Length: 173
Image (cartoon, rainbow, N blue to C red):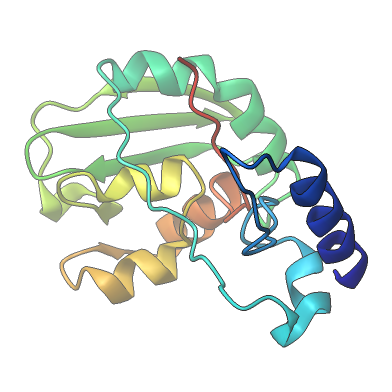
């Protein structure tokens, strides 16, 4: 970090003109919130940015989950439930999803008549997206939104399918 600071000062001095003086004011990293460089830097970096919480819309949730099903199947194979056969009904309070598992293969159907009484998990509003995009764990979602819940089977499946992952999103213009 000290070397970056020195090089940054040299670049600022080199690029400085009388009309536009330049001075290095800070050095930072854009490596994503979980990168080990932040832990190694400790207090040497004056500002720590908390990763931005995304707002993502998915116009065709069933189609999207079908599209990523091969990834979900590979995650399931590495989870506590490899080769699972059964179903998982997700209640979003205004509809839901029905995931059908056949020896570890996943198919997806809309569940328009979703109801908490027959669901394996209830995730109101947009809370499911935190899991779907691996932004938060099921436990984190449940602690932030008390009306989110999952039975034991759903907890195992959701945790295996949607593990929390470090991510960095680049905006494309």
